[in-house]
Image (cartoon, rainbow, N blue to C red):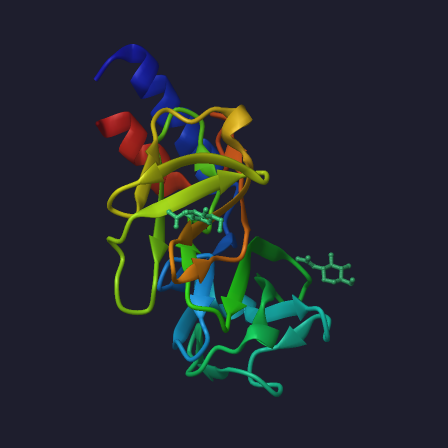
Length: 208
Ligand SMILES: *[C@@H]1O[C@H](CO)[C@@H](O)[C@H](O)[C@H]1NC(C)=O
Ligand SMILES: *[C@@H]1O[C@H](CO)[C@@H](O)[C@H](O)[C@H]1NC(C)=O
């Protein structure tokens, strides 16, 4: 291991030790858009389960409502939603009793025939971004991709990869499949290289 890597590791280790009680929200399937009727599981991945994290959401109709309180079924540190509907579109996050919060994830549920599968978490600068345009039954039909309302290109198999993203790739993406329809738009954000407390990807960076 090079000295700089070692220093980086020490730096990260010290960061980790002063950031206990972190929580991150993950969603399965990992997609910012879902079809109506799909089941979804959201999970508060915590360092300290005694902190009592709960999943909350804001939608256009409700603010800060909690899993189990009219929607979703709590199961340990997860919240399962057996049937997504368009009015469940909104921002989801984990919150502790003390008011600490996780990253938030924006989910769009459509009653339409096409979704754009985009990353739920910000993409790191320099990484590749892959967008997939899907119908309920197929994810390899020719699809057109759009950013901020402008056509980018048609991809013959429904996947578009942007290599080595930078901040200018951040924006509102959507796609369409001819004779089927158009997806809702989703925001894709790109973050710089600073440590974002996602220590798993930081370790991967060091050791690869
Ligand atoms: C949820 O809504 C409340 C009230 O509008 C707002 O203060 C809060 O920032 C929202 N949370 C997220 C994660 O968007
Ligand atoms: C996307 O929609 C536009 C406008 O309806 C259409 O002209 C184009 O052929 C569509 N592209 C694909 C790949 O479906």
